[in-house]
Image (cartoon, rainbow, N blue to C red; front, side, top):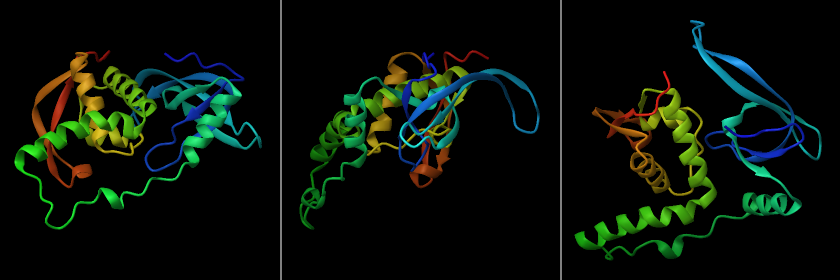
Length: 203
């Protein structure tokens, strides 16, 4: 559980396709978690009210698992500002020519290398955030399917392969196992994806 205190400034993950931004914590409180429309008590969530550190604009309330990085110094603020405003590098030079088709062995090696490189391409901070997001998700859900994770607010990385690295970490840590079923994924153009069973669910 994160130690979120009034007066701290955290970097907020605002969900899919929405930029992160720093927020000043003005209050912290707990509220019962219920199933929409049914009112079932599912325990408690901890929330924080945040505002813009410079203008005082009210951002609203966020679950603390969506606060992804504590900004503890001016250097932290500057580093985050630089990362959020850095332009995407041009990828034209990475595109293969029309006749530059790889062999099967080269394609397989490229896929394996890409999974390893995805950590640095997407940022070590995103990978650490995704690992914690999956752990918290598996604590509260009996099963995990990739579409459900994205719908829960996991921010998309720069490289789609980075999600595979986070899932591999969750399996290696013993947080989940294959559930023996699969579904079509909207996020993967209706390709078949495996459903996993949580091994750490608290319910």
